[in-house]
Image (tube, rainbow, N blue to C red; front, side, top):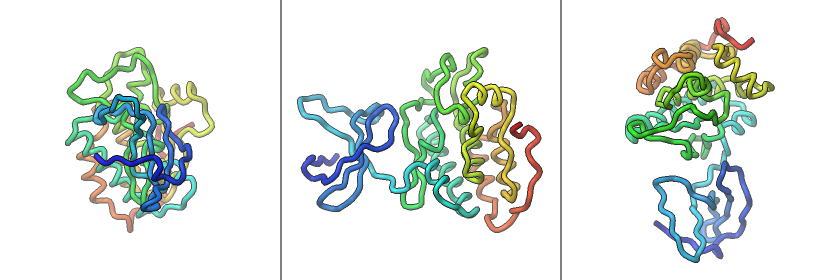
Length: 254
């Protein structure tokens, strides 16, 4: 672990973040931008408790969040597919290697740096073999939350298929560059999701990609693919073809 003195930074500006404060600093020696967290709630990070104040220095994502990136940039299909593969690969690493469910998966917890995507904000993550958490209280960004977690009438424990649901919505957003259920309030969105309503595919989107994300956001867990099946499907999608007008999803948004 390396330590840096605060006198080595030239600028310190408040940036986006969840519960902890996040700052952007420009380091004098290298002119490199870093993200600095004031509060750390990651179980893998040790806290040093003494009179001095410590900050966690992280790589700064120059492209901002995926949500912001999609709104501000025109992205060709081949790059949409590449982003989808990178995101799915990261989820595969979480589910298979680390046995972790992200639990709060949405475009503002995905960062873009040097035209590549990185997962962030693991404050709601839980181990697949651990106690985890249940849908006693609904939290998160509603359009991306697993319907099973939104339905508080039936007790449900979060699992990897909850991330898969979120992944499906994010895949749709990669092609639409719009927020799901944009303009609707939280309760109205919840009602629609629990009723099986989903956003409609964007015309000229790859047919195989549409079928994939529609499977990901199915209402029932058993009908959603696992991350290995998703990666396998993504690997056979050709960015050069299948870009034809499609019939809207039968349960499309109304």
